[in-house]
Length: 270
Image 1 (cartoon, one colour):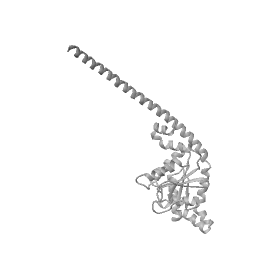
Image 2 (cartoon, one colour):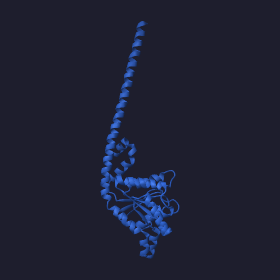
Image 3 (cartoon, helix red, strand yellow):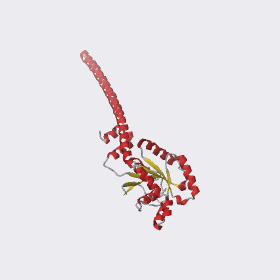
Image 4 (tube, one colour):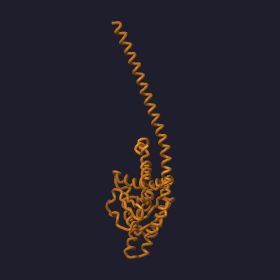
């Protein structure tokens, strides 16, 4: 059974089917997706991680589709802001990056915004639930820390830790990292937190190959059960439709025979 046929049988399982199809395609580089709300510093963070100005940074909306770059054997994926497009086109692109293609998710939140809002908490809960099923890891990245006092940073971290107790929270400053590189300041680079984030990503990348294998098996088993149930349901519907057609046909034959008999009697009387 091909994937188109599976989609026909299980139209409400499109995300899982697309993920399985993606995993079973030719060998792909591990994918790290950066997700989060619009203007929270996703593109700046990616530029720091890949050490070049590859991703557009602007106060206006720039990222309206998936944008990627290969660096050190990893495909880095920039996604539109989760709240960028009221028409939800960008949201769909963001979800494609976060769910269909990604192995590791970096959930970006700007420290100036304080604690996570409800939509971000909902997304974090969804990511944590997915981690239990797929094994894919999510890291929360607290960005633009150079713009607040240390106590404010500590307070925001504490609040977010209550909201997302199962996920690591890594504070970073892409701006401070860039300054450190330009001035050759090891202290600024260290205080930027970028190297700490890199180490966390590298640790997560070590599990990607095995995680993908486990996820393929889990998705295959899940879809197999759903396909069996779906085929059973389709067969039951088909039998029901056949029974209805047989009943209609039998009724038609009976009515035809009755009509034929009446006409025959009338003709005989005439």
